[in-house]
Image (cartoon, rainbow, N blue to C red; front, side, top):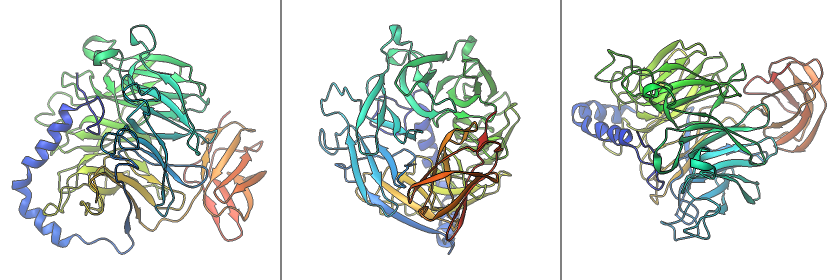
Length: 504
């Protein structure tokens, strides 16, 4: 069984992550001359602007390694895996924080005021999801793990503590959550019983905390259905089913992971197993997949932490039917250990690599990159260091102002940072939820919305109410069809970054 983590403070550990780090270091001698040349030549594009916004100091959090989430108020919300006011800066059990676009940070909640019991959970990881009620939902990894709800004001409620069912049949060690079109939450646990003895589950949970286990992995011979689902949250496809990855198992003896599809009723199908025979010494199609996202063309895109032609990780594309393509193999000079992807408002895919950089003489601090759906990769930033942050070990978020935001686990105080990167993309709006029937209440999030004059769903006019400069409430109009949501203001017309899907 493979054990894995993104930080050193949880109960999980990773043999393959350690291999990735050691291999990256061992390859430095052979590429040193090339990287020195890249160091001299690497100059950021004038259209790009990188800013380090926050340096954590321990008491306000330590080790942010989770993607940020934008709230209905326009601010950004995130978690740190440790730090906080309980147990000392280096011993704290993690925090939930809020940050403005300008970098003003507020700690909303510090976990575990009753250590070692930690009845409210501890070590929140990997991030938060904004629900349709405007509150945030997340998980903690201390002990068997919890699911919690927290309001934008910082009121936290523990909804479920894992391993509370007989034989821990509800799982152990929850990962990311997502809210589906039916309003319930879906997620995974990396184990399916106590003491790391099982291989993970997929679960459904109501907003009130009622949990149902939909599937337990490694139910087939040799874990052909996969083992230890980990990484980015499940993705609900346009067909209503959910898609995700496991970091181990599969139909091949390489135990390199899978891509799977699961119905809301719990019927699972493995649609790809990594590292078929003949792909050694490296799994040239990748190894240890790190989650999926569905792009506007209907296909899914993801990354693998290891594998590829140089062993430093890959970007891949896969259709719902399982047609697979490796789009890019990293070679350390353009990054190593790529993190989950997201699609920007320009249609390109954006992500980070936790290690690897052309700036090797300064630091091996990671990169920010963009890649087209055809596989053309451009490194946008490779100057991470201990001043502006290093090791961006989580994916990026694009805010409605057009800029990208992310976190690093190291920084000026060696406690992590939050950064922004502008590549010249303009503002847009996003909807919550992103799909629904006619009559569904929808929140539209954006910037400078107070002067809104009209809202349309693929051209169909909708009634609306301006709640604030960052939020409009509306209802899907009768006769609306799937398409772009447009918000007209006195000075601009803002379009949604993804099409709103009108359900039958």
